[in-house]
Image (tube, rainbow, N blue to C red):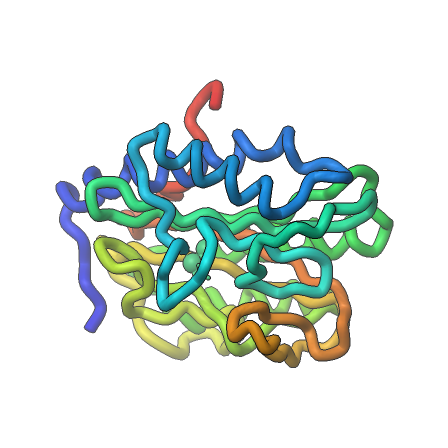
Length: 252
Ligand code: MF3
Ligand code: CO
Ligand code: CO
């Protein structure tokens, strides 16, 4: 069952989406060689509380930290720890914030210091893949249309799309229907309707698409240890297309 949200519900989601988006802006200046992902976790946690939010990842199905930090070949769900970031790393910071019981979910891949040419290409393709997916969202299009445009663009650039993890409906619940897979065929899958609220969050690998989960039961890595990059927004379907809810506020 896919819930359509009323305008009042969408308004109620705005603060959570806003805090999540602003957190990514806030954290950028800290993403430098030498910082640990634990420190990033602490800064995100404190900022979230200060803004009146709750970090959704903390204790979510037992996740031990307040944010996911996925470095280099980590695809998603990286657990912050005491390792330091190095010049040339890439890191996805995935922030999900709860405000007044509503969730906002957004992520971005950052460069640590100066990026390597291939890493930069991968990150730019992942960023563009999300935008192309967002651009096809409108009532009457299908979820397959979203997946198709993302997969086609990524593979044209000779990268690959992760199959096992996907975007999702979001609201009072962190992960709800529908699932938004980032591959597919035009016209297939569920029809997109006004009032749907969901994320698009393609994970793009530099090598092959298969992934595995480490023994900590969370950290997802590329099987071939190739780099992986990801971007994510939460959006609502309007009459004429997607309205992104996780855009940072002016001056944030
Ligand atoms: N934020 C992730 C997503 O985009 C989910 C993280 S679940 C966690 O759906 F438990 F690892 F935080
Ligand atoms: Co998400
Ligand atoms: Co997320």
